[in-house]
Length: 332
Ligand code: TYM
Image (cartoon, rainbow, N blue to C red; front, side, top):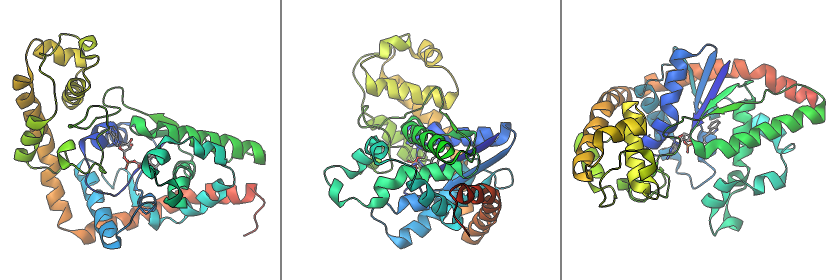
């Protein structure tokens, strides 16, 4: 068993990241056998407009946020991609395996490039191939992610299969995505059809893990809803995207099913539900925000943790990178 996952060090860790992925990172770190590698995808972050000073600061901050959320550098290998050159090296080899037709189907590129496709960076287009390298480099068995990363992981499996076939080797293991059954996709608080995202210009659309209690309460109070009371079963939330999102956030935070939450709130309006949800969020996130502030105050300790994590990751990556070069007949 080998667990690998990454997060872009852009902006803050938000509730979508936490419930969709990071909480699973922590649970798998604590409960599963084998190595766990968690990294900051700084090489992915430069595929769109990059401010160098901000990237450096964000990389440290995101590392602190992950540790505050429960990632323990003694139990998991925590590092940033740029410190492990094998990611970029393997990506080049895989560019020659991936097909243009496969990348043309990637929905995230279409969303991120928008109307300006011709002006997008080659890196943004090739992004999923670097992501495949991130995972294939470590003979990964499980990749804990939110639902939006599923297509990229299917591509990683296609690339691994083709590389193995083309070279007549078993160089790569096929990774499985681990997607949480609830909270696989947390939606924006302002629009129940858009996913909660760091790139949404409105901060009111997301709960950041380091928001203070007043901010959390205010964001939940202002979250878009509808005038209907809550139903008694999940089926009654159909066609009510915003209501369904808030209930599923509650369920995920409380570690309950949607039906269990509805059994408690059935017939009540959002006037009663929202304060309960706000308080649950405040109480659950408070220790994370406190720990984050402590960790952030010591950037040298963060750098040392990332440096040590990178050395361990590089050692684990080496055999697979060597095997990939050899499978292609490259002399080094
Ligand atoms: P990123 O940085 O956008 O998000 C990090 C993780 O958070 C999950 N996530 C969500 N889950 C539920 N609801 C949401 N609204 C939501 N928003 C984000 C994402 O699914 C992800 O698991 N390409 C990746 C980073 C990456 C990676 C990898 C992941 C690079 N290489 C290798 C796994 C394996 C990304 O941009 O995630």
